[in-house]
Image: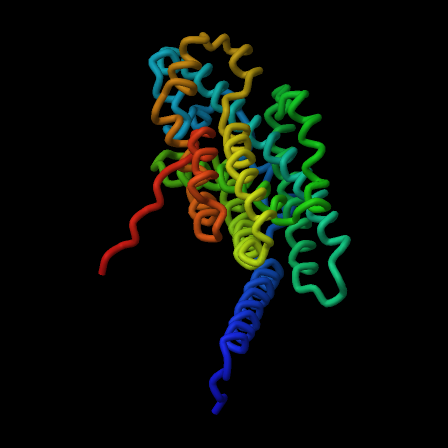
Length: 329
């Protein structure tokens, strides 16, 4: 029988060892899951199956309820073919932005892995994630290619600014994994809502979403456990800086992932007042942005990144919501 620790320092040491062991066990489990269940985009998606072919006029491309434009009278008054074309453009742009984000993510992960010491449990999982993100990029680009739409993803100036993202791990790995969650959580939130909306979806879109959700769940889990393990042990000054930067990154990233693409607005001549009513002045659209990073917001509060000062930044970015009350027995 193991004797109890003889001092507070010994108890704290035992807790640290236990927490580290639990953290390593999570990483090992995620690595094993990546071996046991993964997908190859050109093996597991029947791209050339007649049912998977992309027809721009297919009504299954119409915007889902999660996109507030889908319920606006202007959109509903368009022809079925136009509604389908707008929806397909929206999906293709989301996938293009997704593969661009994952390109930045892969480069950042490799910069992080480059400096890991021998025996680091994170090394193996980071490479599993990098490989899976590479598959996602091929999967998204193949979908975009088959739509034959001239979507470009991120606006040019934003794409240039985003090139700093892969170098964030050289400054702060904790900040980098907040960036990771800022890109992954909003898309995961939207895709899960779309799959639960009760509509009949195009099989190609649905297959891609289901693969992406399944593998991104592991990536999100790793980022969350990494932050839980590292942030509480950061020096107070560095933790405060991370607390200031986090809501800014998350607010910007959520809007990048969920905002309507400008080329789509121009191509289909969506009136400015419609865009304003649907996306800018619509309380439901603002709530969607807050909800899309809800889990990350709760994580930041849990690990000590939210205080009276940083909460004001969350509020200024339009992404603050009071923590949910724990369920009573």
